[in-house]
Length: 217
Image 1 (cartoon, rainbow, N blue to C red):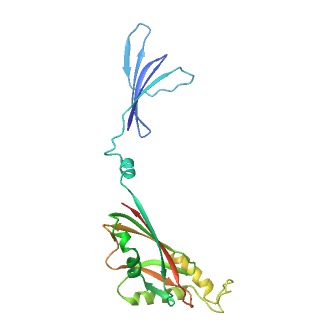
Image 2: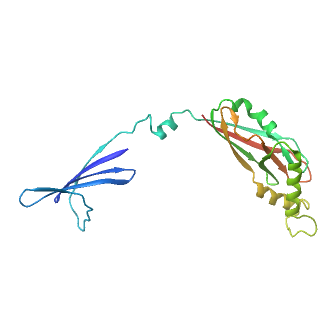
């Protein structure tokens, strides 16, 4: 949107256009003592108070091209579901089929949007990785166990639930507890070899809750 402003003061008249907070042009018409007028382009610095009269002319935005208008009229919608995953042994597990089974009906209503997957726990984590070769899951678990020590020689203080207690919290923070995945034409827009993993970091299996929130059009 461009605003044209006409300003009339004691020194003459000038017009300027403002678009996106930027002055586009300034044209000043100065009336001389003998009634002559001279047009010039200049930068004006007022050191005192000059009485001004301002008249603004607004060019209305076109709803057909205004992005904000398009977003507000597009009928954006939301859906949310909490999924309970069964207890899984310690390690990394592919859970894409389970997630899709639970949200497929809602997911099909979205042509474009985002799926937010949130794990409600501090001793497990979510990540996206290889969905084909299970050796990748096993190797990832080996890696985590090597870089986060546990046992009597580990320096952790928080061990009230066992030697795997604090290491589980650290691993959870390393991978994180949430994912954001694009939605395209009713499907999660992931790569061919990408899958959603739940990484269980505790020795004792426990059920895990995942909240999936869908937003889009």
